[in-house]
Length: 72
Image (cartoon, rainbow, N blue to C red):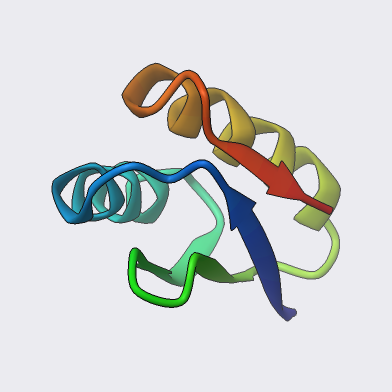
C-alpha cells in the first residue's frame, strides 16, 4: 500500500532526508520519500501491517523533528 501524508512544521531539508532514511529502515517499508519543498511524505509498505508501520514512522519522525506533525 502506498499513501501520501501532509507534514506540518517540517523545518529543514536535512531533517526531511534524515526522516526518509530512518523510515526506509523500518521493517515492512518498501520505499519512502519525504519532501521538504512540498511538505509531504509518501510511504510504500506492506498492506497487512500498514497501520503498525505508520505508528513506527511517527515515532522515528518525532526523534528527528519533534515539532513535525504527520496528518493522517
